[in-house]
Image 1 (cartoon, rainbow, N blue to C red):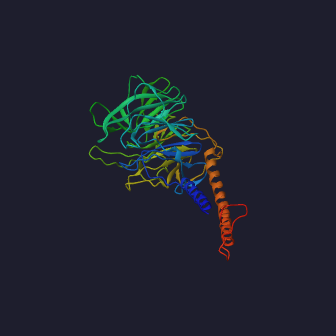
Image 2 (spheres, helix red, strand yellow):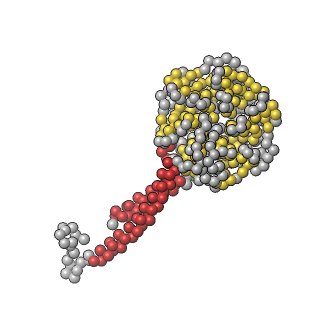
Image 3 (cartoon, one colour):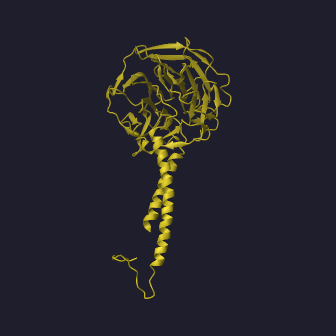
Length: 447
């Protein structure tokens, strides 16, 4: 009698685990990473508060419609990060994620651990690994945003290196480091006419191979205080010639900001959202105006503009969030709300329709439309997928849940049958009037 009930308990617990995975409620966070692979918006890393960090990998299915405040997150248990990290950057090369930099903490010792600065995630096998890298030595960096070109070269500009991890003080950089994912080698480029020391900027690579940098924090001279960069001062790096240049953007006035997001649209507009500002006399962060603006890179010089309806039904002022572009939607996830001084709820994302230039509440994927993705934590090579096509992992999970439910129903019938038979058998095998015990013919086992 023990076996049927143990089997029932095992199946019930298995189905409960599947339900927990499919109905995952992720912790709120900021300074995380997000990428889109196979119609999934993957979220990982980030900080929950000043002393608590995350390592889970989970996703939002973008192949189905949903309301922005009624989400179904799905956990990928085997995709847990090998470390805690935040203020890092993540780049997508095909179906491989490269995670670089940030503040890194060992999950076992809970000490800062910079023994590996790059981690690689194979989406097809859901495994993280540490690539063996050669070439130049690059020190740890935080608050960087990398980009990747069509040759698989990752460009990391400047950033901050906290040499005192108790006070978060350290050095700002303005060098350009390139990770060649084909040869697994780092190269620190030797370049003249380099820009100011910079961090917390936006970085997007145009189809012509020019990387556009703006915003964030910079240091204009030795021993000077860190200051917010002028949003009209655009830094341009040509990956074809490895040369820097500058441009003065025109158009509407845009507040300087840090910890904001940016996405590049297929028609050459860089959309920024959110972020925060601060003053030298205060350690507090303040909201920026406008919250949303676009930079037209088709014009020479580039031109800033504020869409007329961009403030209607707009999200609250947030920073430390992430933004991704999927078809005609810019999707904003997590972050910290400056008005409420609370984290954005994990049950909600914010959706901006780049065609109508309006904030919307309903996400409807476009059938059979190729997907080009860009992110707040780095610009990626285009990933073309078919929204109607389900990944093998989604099918496996769905099939597993279906089979599990079928097995559960079957087992209920089996257990009911066994229990009834057992009761009948016990009744039939009660001692007779002479006190004898019934035995099965040809067997020494008593019942």
